[in-house]
Image 1 (tube, chains in turn red, yellow, orange, blue):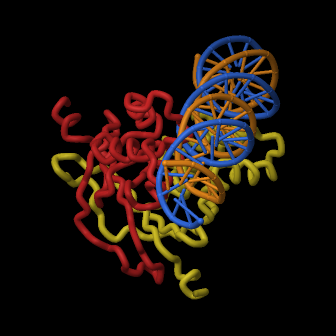
Image 2 (image 1 turned 135 degrees about the horizontal axis):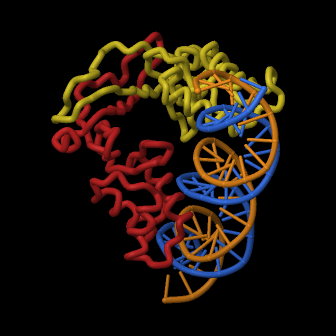
Length: 120
Length: 120
DNA sequence: CTCCTTAATAGTAATGATTACTATGTAAAA
DNA sequence: TTTTACATAGTAATCATTACTATTAAGGAG
């Protein structure tokens, strides 16, 4: 991979955010620094960075969201739809289940977040 | 919900399949019984059946797939992309993580399936 | 430093899954 | 049997993502 200003900018945005941004949100933030950056460039670089394990992606409601490359899972609130980082408490990587080699796994927790419980 | 031939057909297809079908595959199968069934009807009824917990849905590579309403997780092979049912081995439902109430959770295991290991 | 190759980009068009819309049909209650 | 609201077929629209193409610019070779 060559160096590129656009890719560096996209990486910094994802790596410094705690907000689980989607591609379009990253595009909007990137335009503050590079006003004429292309949405296609954002998508291509997000894929490249994900392939090179520099960032991580996961899906909520069919939309890909991007995250710093730190191992954790996600809790998604049924009410307010917020996404909360959850540390992995068990490491099942490189184990076998029914003969299938598990290299990685993702847990998506669903329920009611602490804030929505407080409001009830 | 009223009774409808189309909805019954769609439910039977999902409930009798082990193949984790997507909406279009269900549409193709349904047309064997109801040749002029509409793709929109398939989508609407899959959503209705999911909302009523008669079937389940999950996402792989951004595409919604449908499954019998039996509690289990999924293993997705990195090589052949097959999807294998995995029984849930731990029940974390209705527990709290960091104050957030977990009502349900899904685990997506990723790795190399038994069949692809055998071929290597 | 300059040239050259090739990856990277901007801008736009295309794709494909899903949803929305509308006139017509039909289940089932009154 | 009549009526009413839900369901359907067929089509159009939406929206995230990918593909395409001419142009730009890393960064290595000379």
